[in-house]
Amino acid sequence: MIRTVALLSLLLLATAAPAQRVAPAEQARLQRLGAALALCHRAIVRRDAATRLSAARIADRALAACAGREAPIRAALVRHLGPRRAQAAMQGQRQHWRQGIARMVAAARAR
Image (cartoon, rainbow, N blue to C red; front, side, top):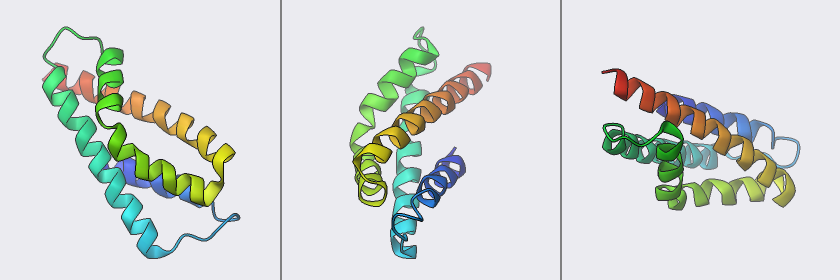
């Protein structure tokens, strides 16, 4: 999951290339932020997977609990893409995170 988040961060920033080049240090910072966000999501999944909550409800809880870690990623997207494109990119990213969290829940429950 951490690799996936890191790659997604790179893909999102790659779409920003025409608007503004991303410095390697900024790219590394965003990768670290994405990895921290993935760990936050994973902790919520580990805690809640054994409950009777649905995968969608666990995803909602994970996204809400980890929103503070998402904020710097969103701010970087706004800087690199502009407000409109950043909003669309974040909507797509949140959908991807929901799907990833649902897969983590399924894997945790299969064990």
